[in-house]
Length: 79
Image 1 (cartoon, one colour):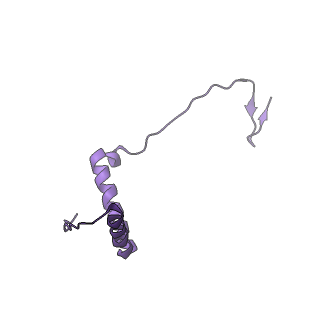
Image 2 (cartoon, one colour):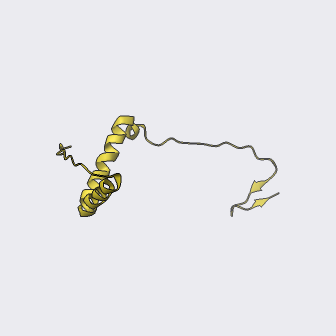
Image 3 (cartoon, rainbow, N blue to C red):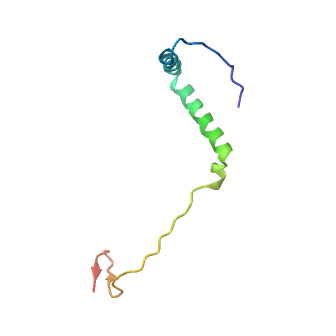
């Protein structure tokens, strides 16, 4: 990842700062916006080590209330 240039700006109000931020992101190309997103995701995953953990597998085991019910080939129950 390359180093970014630090830019500092002063604003008279929070609204003015928000407008400047929106204007900055509007002038970026979609590819530049996507690159920023991917860098943020990569940084978050590096902090939490989430990428190496993978997805959790969840199994639910339930007991049938009527043990004499059998599913037919089409999936509908029969007794």
